[in-house]
Structures are given as structure tokens and as C-alpha cells.
Image (tube, rainbow, N blue to C red; front, side, top):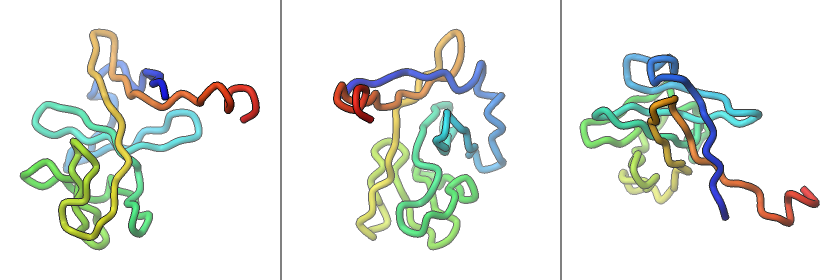
Length: 117
């Protein structure tokens, strides 16, 4: 699988972070949650894998985990691993801050799906 780097903002300040350091962005028909923690940016699914609640309504704990606002399930921003023990996994994507903007790496469709998808 190859990655396609997609620009999501000219600067991190354009991402409209809430007081908890979380923002939702839309890329095409997909939404993502962008988290800012300790001067780093992270991208993950915009909804909790447990109850599909928007994660931008949650918060980031002191260890760098995003916390779901509904049941308080915690997920590592680095790995997507569920660190509170429920066994779920949060999809996440690489983010890069470049001179010309903020980029997220999204999966490119395989050759099969490019032709038939």
C-alpha cells in the first residue's frame, strides 16, 4: 500500500483547534480528528471505534492519549492502541508539518481499485 500526502492546511493555526487541542478536518468525503500535543500533530479517526462518538469532543490526557467523551476510552495518539484496556484500536495516519503547510498521509487505492473501484 502506498501513501498519498494530502495538504490539509497552510498552517496549524488554520485547523481551528478547540481548548483541548483537538480539531476535525474534512478531506474529500472523509473526516479526521487532528490532535495537537506537545508541539506535535497527530491524525486519527474522527469517531471512537467503540460508540462512534466524535473524538474532537474529548480531550488529550497528560500522557498523550486521546480520551473519548462518552465512555472515557483512551487511545495512544502515537499508535492508536487502546490503553484503557477495552481492546479497541483507533485508526491513525501520519501527519507532517512542512514549510508550505500541514499534510496527512492517506492510503492510495491499490491498482485493482484504481481500475475497478
